[in-house]
Image 1 (cartoon, helix red, strand yellow):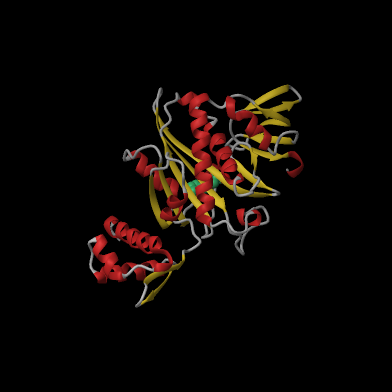
Image 2 (tube, helix red, strand yellow):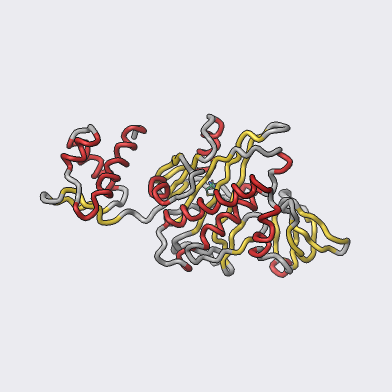
Length: 324
Ligand code: BTN
C-alpha cells in the first residue's frame, strides 16, 4: 500500500469516526476527500480487514461500531497529548520498530518521530535477546536527538523507564523499576526498554528508545510476565501506549532541563532493587559486584555495598542473589 493510500484510508476512518452515531455517507466522504465512491468502499473493506467493525446502512451510511484493540500507530497518535510526538510511523506488523526507527533516524527525520507496531516478527531485547511481540502488546520506538555530550547520556535509559512508569500511573498501574530499565509489577516484567544510539566524539546524532509493553495477557505468557490489563482491565492497548509515550516525553523534558538529579528520588522510590542482595554482571557475563543495593547516584549508577565498599555499577545485568 502506498503512503497516499494509507493516508486516504486514515482520512476515511477519521470521517466515519467523526460522524459518530449519525453515520457518514459514502458519497459525502468521497466528495470531501476527493476520491471516488468505489475507493471509499475499498478503504472501508480494508479497515474491516484490520478489525474495525463498520456497519453500513442506506439511511445513515457508515457507522463505526468498534476499533481493533491493538497498538496501531494512528490509534496511538489519536490518544497522545504531548507535543513532542509529532510524527507517527509504523503499522500492523514490522520486524522491529527499533530497526525501523534507526533507519528513519539515519535518514534525518526530526526528534519526536515515533514508530509503533501492533506486532513484531523480529523484536529485539537487551543483550542480544529476542523480545517476543504478539498482538496485545505495544511495540514503540521513539527518535530523540538530545543536545547533551555523549558522556552524559547514560541515565537516559532510566529516564525512559521512569517516564513509562509515571505515564502508566494515570491508569492505576503501579510499576516498579528494576535498574536499569525494566518495569516490574508484582513478580512479573511489565515492560523493557532498549536504547540504541549513534554519536560522534562530542555530539549525539540520534537515540532510538524502544519499549515493549505487555498489555493483554496471552495464553503463552510466561510466569515472569506482568500485564497492564491485570491492573487496568478496561484500558485499550493504544491508550496504554499513549500514556507511556506521554510519560516518556515529560521525563525526557525534565532530564534535558536539569539532568538526572531532579528525577533521581522518583526513580529510587520505584526501584525494586533497593535493600536487596544482588549480583551485577557486565554484558559479557563477568561479575562486577556482589552486595546490597543502597540506591542510585546522580548519574543514574546503581550503588552496591560490597565487602570492599560501595561500587558504582553503570551498566549490565542485575540478578537477585537469592534467585541465582
Ligand atoms: C529488554 O527488556 O530486553 C528490552 C526490550 C525492548 C523491546 C522493544 S519492543 C519495541 C522495540 N523494538 C524492538 O525490537 N525492541 C524494542
